[in-house]
Length: 432
Image (tube, rainbow, N blue to C red; front, side, top):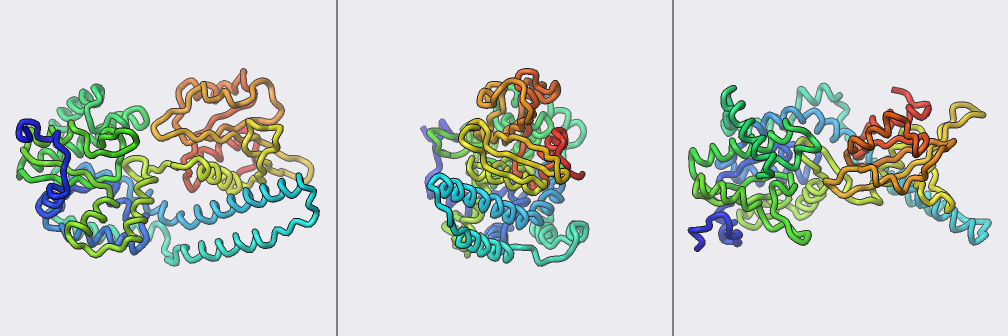
């Protein structure tokens, strides 16, 4: 029966070890980009595992193209990591102090001592300072003199597949769109949020990989941090393995087996199956990076609602706002952001933080929590989800039902450009 239904049977440890020891190891762009976000220990661990299988490494041309398109963003993210840590500490400190002050006030405690709390956060800032990048080179200098790029270039020399020619691009684009429309993996999960070009990118990577394995049939270990449903089979919150359609397609075309692994899984299993020296701390760090990778090209998503709210608060402070938590009589409002333009004039904005689960769009119905009717203080709804057209329409017509209202998507970007622009619309004194 196993021969009659190749691709349907899950892989056991023996099969996975065989793939690790003799299969082709194909890399997605996001795995290479993660090297820029890793610490030196995690980076060396991943590179050590890749170099152990260097004679079997290969990368589709499309994955290489996406890596180069997103390398600058990865370099920028790496420079901003310490800034994000500092902003998160500042936001957490304000949240903790505010909670203590409110409790002390309710209990009529007149001599509440804040110094132990402040000292604790000062110690955190000292630890965060150790994470700051000591390299004073500018972004332009790093872009030109990039040691990570140089190491990747040596590792993948002669191991990059050919691009599609014009005729192939047209043919595979048509075929890919047919598959995506029918929700045949991979690629369809990116269609709504990122459009046809991004969705086709996943399909091109898969198609070029199939062509390579068909040229020289062997088992396939595909390493990607993309964990969306058009790559992985999931049930009851568990990841069970590759989508059966992908395993079956590879088995029917090439007669070989498929195993998918994130960077974390690859490091862990390379340690187990190939005796590669990788520290557990490096493996754990890779898991944190994988958990915050939203899609190809290094986009990120905040997985925890509490952390997300802290990041929103930190971004508001970074924009120059004085931020406070709301009083009990404003249960629908999470934060108050005020900007002082002069000694007598202030701009005050009420902020609602709406965290949505990954893959969900922010729909009009989600505004039911927001107080309606004319308001003297504008409301800014901040969400991690993309907006539907109906919500975007509210942004355009100033919101007749909800008064002065705007909804903005914020995914924890270091610059918070969309959030800053929304604050400017409400009159906040923020520079370009």
